[in-house]
Amino acid sequence: MNTYTLINYFDVWGNEVDGYEVNNQCVEAKDIVIADDATDADIINYLQLAGYLNTNDASLFNIEDNGGFIEIFAKETGMPLYGLRRNV
Image 1: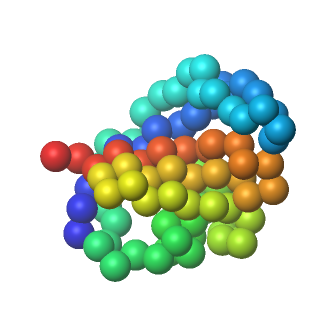
Image 2: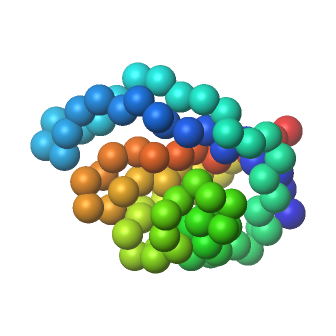
């Protein structure tokens, strides 16, 4: 188990063709516990249950796990939604 800080990318500029840039973000939570063997669906389900996403349909999201940093994107547009940074 690891704890993560959830970052809300609440101000994102750009589009599907040219790409996106996070213009502003904020910390939503600092101690989210995620199991080492959590699947993408587990992460989406947790974020929905905690009220950060409107659905737990994991097929609507892409998740990129870069070691200690996980990013959640809207699958249809590629727009970044949230980041999860592993706490040290």
